[in-house]
Image (cartoon, rainbow, N blue to C red):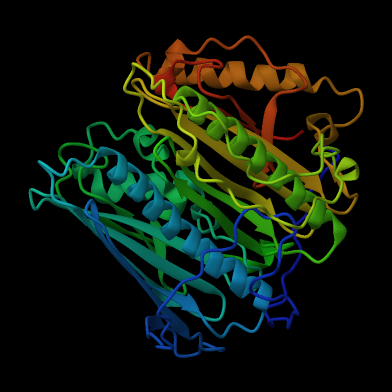
Amino acid sequence: MKKYKFIPIIVLLAFLVTSCSAQSDIPGEITTHVENSNVKADAVQPKINDYTEPMLAFSTVANTIDETYLDYSESYELISNLENAKIRTNINQSIESVIHKSKNNTLQIERSLYDASSNAPLQMKVTGKPLYFDNQVLSYEIVFKTLTAGDEESNSYVFLNYDLASGQSIKLKDLLPLDQFYSQMEATHSESFDEPFNKNTISIYNLNESFYFSDKNSAVFFIRPFELSDKQKQSIKMPLTGIQYDPSKKLIIGAATINKEHIENTDFYDVFFSYPYFEGTDGDYSKINQVIEQHVNELYDYGTNMAILDHQVVEPPALNDLDNNITSPDLDSVETSDPESTNVPDATESIDSSASEFDLPIYWYNLSYNIYTNNEKILSFGLYDYQYTGGAHGLSSGNFYSYDLELGKQIEIKDLFEPKFDYITYINDCIYRKIDQEVKNDPDSNYAYYDFNGIDENIKFYIEDNELVIFFDQYEIAPYAAGTPTFKISLP
């Protein structure tokens, strides 16, 4: 039996008034939250049920970017009146993090690859709006529309769904079992897929960002053209019937997640960091935020120093001066850092006269994150590093942190099992069986090239949906094309 049992509790549907503010000062931060401009207090009216109480209102955020390489505009709606400030902040910041990540990645790519002699600027328009809400759920749509120099238009869609009483995201399997979903897909749109229907094709699709509620008891699954096969020339909107969403299974969030950013570009490196700050009021969250700051600063120092030295610059900049005593992500070992942030010197001020004989590219350093569990008992999240310093592709890796908020300690993988339980053999057996099963189903799949030889106690993991997820970095057990393999392990 596992030691950590994440037992759902009934969430009160009455919204609780909290004293959490939408933005807090952060000790030792390297950048402030990017504020939005041109806010209009315009309410929108998506499809709603007649009985809806309270009625949500939304304000509009609008921004533009006019560069030689990018013509960009965004207009999206944020909740303006949800009584629970912690939940309102968490949902709004979640929406903005998706938009900001796409915007800044596009900026980074277009700035690096733009050729003024042969290219017109990329045109990109982003819109975000609520599609449906009632007194329990909110469905939100983000549309990314791009227009290239050849007037080729491309649209992509992200759908976000939230439980308004808990602040948690709603996933597809919260509505209906995945086997039932696959059966509906096969029965309704079999003509759109390669024969016979292969659920593995859709299982790699981002299921949780591809559906939205159409009313209290119905939802729609959306698939872009050509996503599943060459035969699928039109988008597919598949009604999901027989859904039974139970909000009582959602635990309330432990702390609102604020999306922090650091964006910087020079002649030698291009940095886009997006990382979480947990707006909690107790000491645990403060220490966790410092762990994140430590990771951010180490990645920044490593990347910018290497970029500057490789490009023949004498004096690398320093981001800020964190306390040298911060050496471990363990909650009890993290000291308070200096709240004063420092300015980053301009790297172009100290160029060595002996330039490199190689035409080095601008180095890219990205940091993104994902929150897997965030409730009043457990917090589990991942920080993903990406670097590109030339060659065919970049390299990425993940670092994961899980905390028992009730005990005030970081969770080790052994803590998820009873003492003396041979969890390493158990996990190894689960992974071996999964690989064998996938190879049997498809001998040409990436699984056929996995070279898995077992885990040890230092394996990377996170906790999602009451399951243990084992994570492997690129090249760790598989070729680059396989990405970063993950395996979900049921806890005994």
